[in-house]
Length: 118
Image (tube, rainbow, N blue to C red):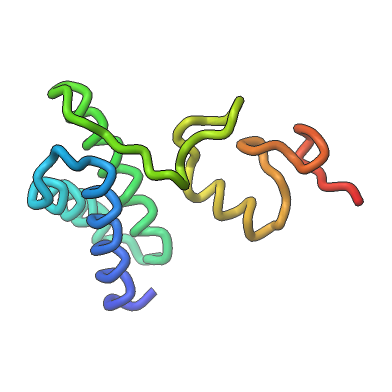
């Protein structure tokens, strides 16, 4: 991932988190994201940095929102399906979509085995 791509991805993380936490100041959200991003600046493999930053920042902001009673929006795409993890791991969702299979998060098309049979 190029530095420009990573910067754009981090900006998108800020946008998504600002939508998810509308009662928190955007500047505060950006500060949390930048803080989490700085903790990963020494890593050599940069491809997953935006995903890791988003997950860490989201967890911090959720904790802050819970402590302060702030409103947290759940984006429509993240609304949990029945019997699934309410906050799926983005890397696990991506892996399952690449493999074209169900996963332990969503179950297989033909049950919970994770296998898709014709």
